[in-house]
Image (cartoon, rainbow, N blue to C red; front, side, top):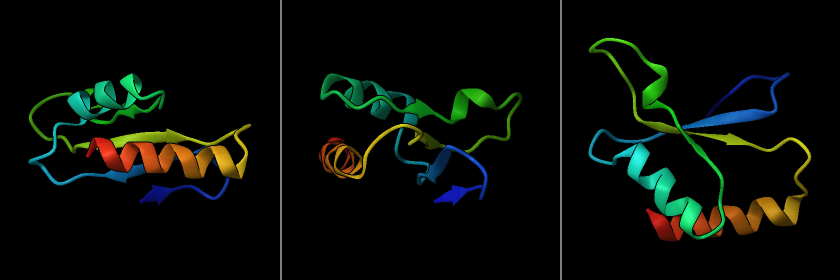
Length: 73
């Protein structure tokens, strides 16, 4: 996990064998909204990951979202 102290989101880095775009699409199918990290890069160098926003979301909803996301992986 990568995050900034003043941010409303964190980034979960993924191993290269996990397609972050496909994972974000599977997550959407179970009601979890996350953004893939790889499209944020230009050129050859890139990292796979998910951008997880948590602003305005209560703790229970975050826990449930993480459970759903875990099943997608």
